[in-house]
Length: 325
Image 1 (tube, rainbow, N blue to C red):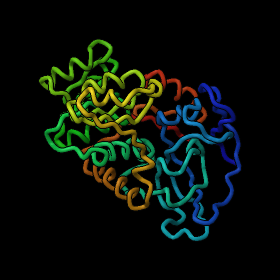
Image 2: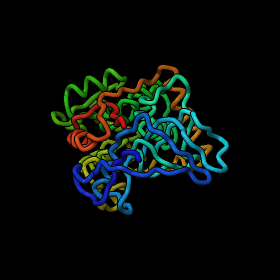
Image 3: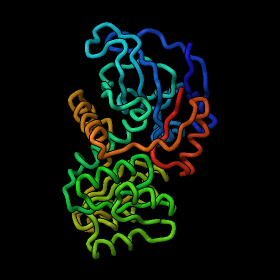
């Protein structure tokens, strides 16, 4: 028996139960993975609260890193002892000491990247890769707005944008977070608690607005984010930290200058083996080169996951957070 977090109902952090589970042996095309660390991401909150429905009872968590301890029939790309990581494709269940999962969801870790770093960066780092390199392939000299610039995704985006020569305007909620984003390469930082971010974006861009807005906040920022775009700009809505975006008419896009809107997800961008390897491969290369450093600013024991969720939802965290089984 091993320990895992299970959901038997949706609700607040208290609904996550630390229980004994039987992992079992891997079936055809599967491996059994022993986790060294698991990642904490805001999407976990969406599943826990029921914003993203799933059959119950269920596991929780979409990101982890560890060692393959058993392989099922037909698995040829991985062997016992391989160091691996995953994010987004294996379904919920990362909050566990061990789990059985489809081998095709895994990627092998370079020797230079340790388990904690991998667990902290796979979901967030691959998200930044597809946002900046695929959803809208950014070019040097372009200007973007990125909300939550001091979060796990945000700090990686700050560094990646700087490496691309992109001018990143980031929003944060405190002066301390503003300094953190600036230290990681964010060109301009706006404290939205004390400044009107639409007015500041227009000021910074000489009234033009930005080419792209990356918004993981949702309800509280969506409409104002549209106001920051230049004509024919792209709104990338990739999260709902403040709640889902309310219904709106498509005329809102037309009236602001024929704007584009997309709601991407990591799963769509890593749906094939080739896409997963390419996305993870570029992330690994950026980390190995030193252009991106992963800040693990919070560590919690797996049994203390409820407190980790409370801190995440209260916006008390910065950078990446991991759970240690």
